[in-house]
Image (tube, rainbow, N blue to C red; front, side):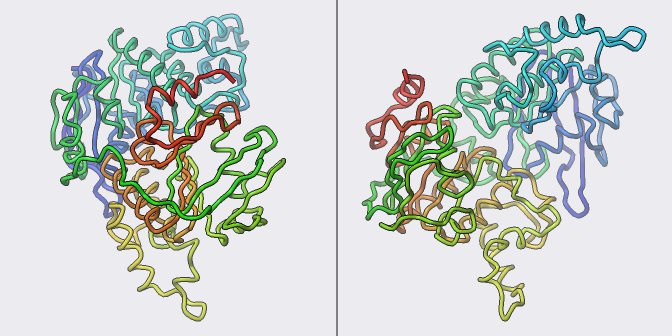
Length: 493
């Protein structure tokens, strides 16, 4: 057995993150670590990688007891954690990042020729498009940066790779390349622990699983490639009805948001688009196709080079995020965890943008704030001890749900969502979609970016396809297929 974690427990003050958790991984195995947000998955990986220490329990690597207390000690033993977060030095080249701290030297001089050889060797073990060693790391895409981090771990002769939601910021094409690389590494005897909230990914890549619930190991065994609804219930710890193939058809109202020949410095380019009351409009395309740039321009985070934005028949003049919020337009970007204030309570984070609704004569009404906290904790199943727990003590997924709750608390008329279901478990994804659908039924409009064609088809009324900064097709969702979306995204300019 390559890895054995036996009876691992971890407490943070009064929060019990892990309770007698157990994990076993064989040599050359890709093992799925599943569980709801806050189940303790990331905490267990941080303990295995030496970033944190358990309060109790044993860890065996190749049947030998391990007692590392720092990530460096874990790496020397062959254990590497690949985080979803970008960990490269953007001002250095790919080669310099790969060899950082491992530079071959002689009499104090760095051997550049040997460095280049080592860098090319490590990069050559990856699948997908080649990555130039001389390229500055700051110019890498999320997928390329992740592959560089995997290549850096290969220079340390890894025995165990720990991947914490590695596909969260990747496109479908980058995910396929990553999976091919992981299968190749497993074939060489490297063990891999793989965390993902996407059951289809785990089923496609992994043979066995361990399921955590409230910090405990509740199940383990062979990963059944079917019965997704049963898995959703098992992961969330509650029954969840099968999701419908299509949302009920809604009647659209008058135009809510109109873009007229809108363009930015680079993208988007001369966009004409109308969002109606009660419409969920999905934005499909590759990363960099202009979808996110368009949402940022609408919200005032990027300047317009040309064109106009109209809301309810009147030309927009907000020009900044505060003005957009006052106009009833709210935006949730892809890096929502950056919006968390870890030292403030859950309730403070939730009401931060709506303090006027929770004050009386300049004083904060704590009872009203607490009620809002409990309400949204229940609505989005935010796992916390209560509204006044520090937000920094929540899991990453629960922090993400907290940001979405703060957004929806403002009751915007237009909701701009960039990959809103990334990093949250399947049951919470369904809850989020139900909340969004309810907003649409109330006559509000939603612009929804997703890299998953199936997600767009399932929940959107209309789908707009972006390619190279331009809106190239706009059709009802019923006129699209997953293959058609992918083909159109890859089509000629």
